[in-house]
Amino acid sequence: MNDSEKLPSDIGGEHAGPVDTHDHGMRHWERQANAFRSVVQMTKLTCTDELRRAAEELGSRYKDMHYFEITTSAMRAVLLEKGAFTEPELQAKMAEIRARFDVPDEMESPVKKAAAKNAAVKAVAK
Image 1 (cartoon, helix red, strand yellow):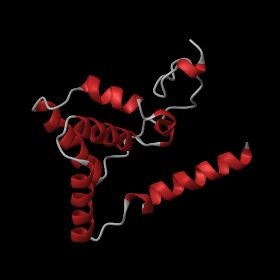
Image 2 (cartoon, rainbow, N blue to C red; image 1 turned 45 degrees about the vertical axis):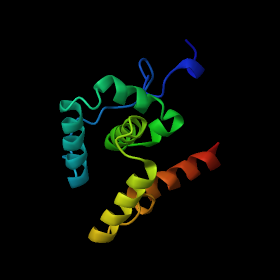
Image 3 (cartoon, one colour; image 1 turned 90 degrees about the horizontal axis):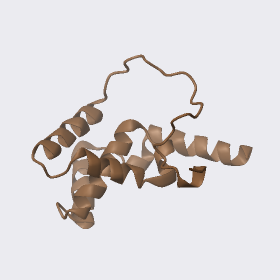
Image 4 (cartoon, rainbow, N blue to C red; image 1 turned 90 degrees about the vertical axis):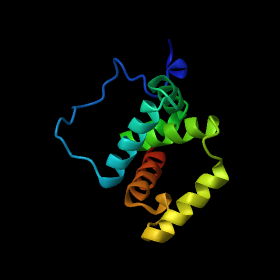
């Protein structure tokens, strides 16, 4: 299998550097995302295989995302596919919650800004 046939999650045999084994804990949104995933899977609305497939379909974005960004993106894709809600319904609910809790758009988050900056630096270095 050549690199163009590999899924973004397939890093077996590649040098990945040292593994950070320190428990960094979970942020509030990560705990909520994990609980949401558990409930959705417990109620059989989706399963691990569907979430894995959706995560693998993230393509090149996969490597630039953190674990919970991958899992929530996969969950979003699967639930949209299954008609649990529509994209406009999701956008409206997200806007309502941002307004209620004074939360910035996810693209304004420090994590996203740092990732965009790192991607720009890597692009210039090539």
